[in-house]
Structure formats: C-alpha cells, structure tokens
Amino acid sequence: MITENLQKAINDQITAELWSSNLYLQMSFYMEKEGWDGAAHWLAKQSEEEKEHATDMAHYLIKRGGEAKVSMIDVVPEGWGSYADVFENVYKHECHVSELINGVVDIASAEKDKATQDFFWGYVREQVEEEATASSIVDKIRKAGDAGLFYIDAELGKR
Ligand code: OFO
Image (cartoon, rainbow, N blue to C red; front, side, top):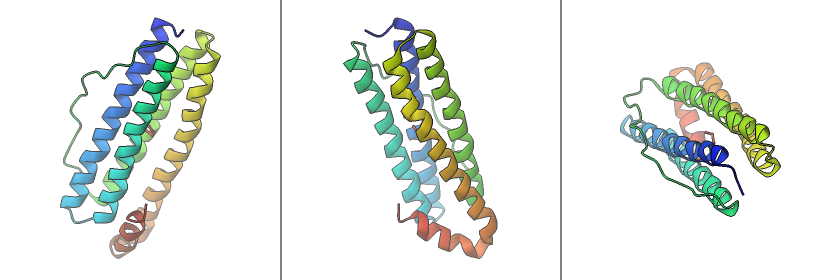
C-alpha cells in the first residue's frame, strides 16, 4: 500500500503530465496556424505521449492500492514566437519536468518505497532522452537558418 504522501506526489505528477499534454497541444495548434505542419505533427505526438505518461502513472498508483485523481488543469500559455522559440520552450519545459520527477523519486526514497522509486527511475531515464531530443532540435534550428527550417519541418513531420 502506498503512503498518503506519495499518493499525493504521484497525483500531482499526473496533473503536471496532463498540463504538459495541453501545453504541447497548444503549441501544436500554434505551429499549424503558422503553416509548420511538421512541427505541429511532432508536438501533437508529444502531447499524446504526455497523456500516456499520466495514464501510466495512474495505473501504477491504482495497482499499489492508491487512488488516482484528475485535478483541475491550469490554463497553458499561448502565442509563441518563432520556430526556435517554440522548441526552446519545449526544452525548458522538459528540464522542469525532470526536476518534478526527481522530486517524486526523492519522496519515494524518503518513504523507503522501492517499487515507486524503481517505477519513477524509468521516468528519470526517459527525461534524459526527452531533454536530449528537444535540445538537439533547438540546435538544428539554430544552425539551419530560415531556408533550412523547411527541411527540419519535413523531418519533424516523420515522427
Ligand atoms: Fe512526461 O515526459 Fe517529458 O515531460
């Protein structure tokens, strides 16, 4: 059975994942409106992935005898700037999520809950990948210049 404290931390993380999902969906709509269909597709996929993370965490919590809750999701920002601005914000947000996930591991560790530590270590590793992916997209955008953006957009559309 999971402790109340840990249950709250996981439910907070579920809310954060759903917020991330909405953030990326909003970015996806923005890029679609700007005519960047590849980025819009990439961001829509990322939005789906974040929702899957929330669901995965909820299933885990229920399996451990806890109660999963969907809390109110705050409104996400809108009106992004350039192509680079959008992906710089994706990168920044992923770094922030990594800190949140580390926080859940810390609580699980303080509660000596090995299963939850192990479960969230999976997400710690996944965040390394997500940060690296976002950072490499930002890098390519910076190197590409305006004309190169069409190539990058086509590549992102293949996700
Ligand atoms: Fe939920 O994976 Fe990144 O944020």
